[in-house]
Image 1 (cartoon, one colour):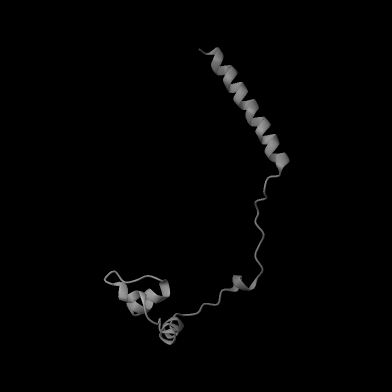
Image 2 (cartoon, rainbow, N blue to C red):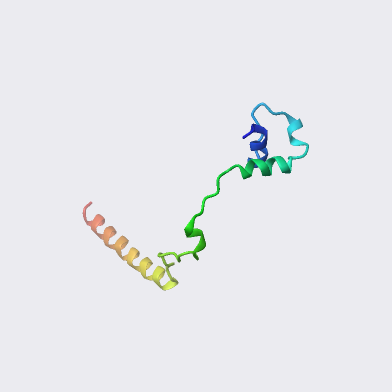
Length: 85
């Protein structure tokens, strides 16, 4: 693929470019012809609906339970450390 055409497709300018490359047409027919050169793949998974995520979000209740348990662990750790000094 020509570097200029690739630059237009990807939205990047060549390293040796100047401000003149910011102006002008992007040769739609040329770019379309270059894109058509890429092979097409038949991907069977794209024909199926997406599978739902296996992870479920935590509810507010789950978060509250975890917070209470964490505070309990912190308190137990603090009481162990205060007696060791």
